[in-house]
Amino acid sequence: MDVIVINGGKALSGTVAASGSKNAALPLLFASLLAEGEHRFDNVPRLKDIDSTELLLNHLNCKTHRTGHQLAVTVKAPEDPVAPYEIVRKMRASILCLGPLLARYGKAKVSLPGGCAIGSRPINLHIEPLQQLGAHIEIENGYVIAEAKRLVGERIVFDFATVGGTENIMMAASLCRGTTVLENVAREPEIVDLACCLRGMGAQIEGEGTSVITIEGVNELKPAQHSVIPDRIEAGTLLLAAAITGGDVKVVQCVPADLHALINKLSDCGFEIETGPDWVQIKACHQWQSIDIDTAPHPGFPTDLQAQFMALMTQASGASVITEKIFENRFMHVQELARMGANISQETQVAVVHGNKGGLSGAPVMATDLRASACLILAGLATAGETVVSRIYHLDRGYENLETKLAGLGAQIERRSA
Image (cartoon, rainbow, N blue to C red; front, side):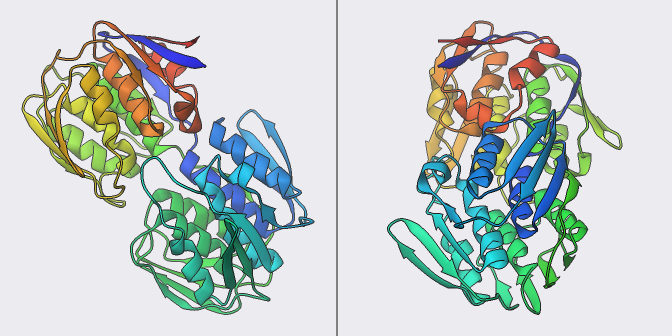
């Protein structure tokens, strides 16, 4: 099993490009199920989660072909629209095939995705809205079994702004009969990207990026030709890597507006930030100030950058209060940071980080989830000793060659076989 080995203490410098967004690519690929024929997606990152999505699409009688960062999906009607447990268990986002299969073929059988390391992510946020659209749904033997002759548009109010739930119902409603109005929806850039792709396929959607999305159902859609947006979480992680090392780094091929919450916090810490149409540059700060953050749905501070920001706060001047309001179990990196010498006190979903620049030391640590793996790598970049991060299969789910990108900025980091 591979590990990441870091010898930190070096300021990063240079220019690095963000890859395509994992969280945007996954729903886009599942949206291909809405229209038979050949779909083409550009700027698709090479990640384990993308591999898992391809595997599920292949099981559903689709053919996939990758050339570099372009992924072609040829969709044919599945012999049996079933998403089996042995595939779904690898990735919770597999539930996103439920809405498209049901809307396009009138039935779907999708395995329950099971537990999640960072939180429960309740399945009812997908099931109940589909029932409101007229689906008959039962849960039997660990599977969601759904049927509907044709879904019918309805007004749906989400209990809270769920990203996956919003995406699933957007896709299903595109082929509904009549008008669907979704209220209290997620506003993330990935939602906007999905709406743009669906509109290119012939869907009638408006309101994406706001709290209300209106969809006028159509009888059929055409195959997609779409380029995935840049990964704002990867771009943010690279900016934080530069920050924690006191570096000077320009992140290109990104969308600065999607990083607004992070940029504001970094500016408040004392870092100098410059932005252009598709780039953000962060410049060295000798000693940065601690800043409190509360994670929140977009446009608030993203939960997917909370762990990485905590690493930065271990080196800040003063104490920082970090409140996790999205997932109930997303502080598992705290114990691993403590192994490196971090002074963090935690109670339920609030962590107080007592900053001490130079207070970390290299240690063997274990990644517990995707963003925790990035957090530990950033912490390793800030130490003068050797840090070995294990269980990096988490990292490969959502970061394309992160160690290579960091090495290109001057980090002493490499992947080794343990």
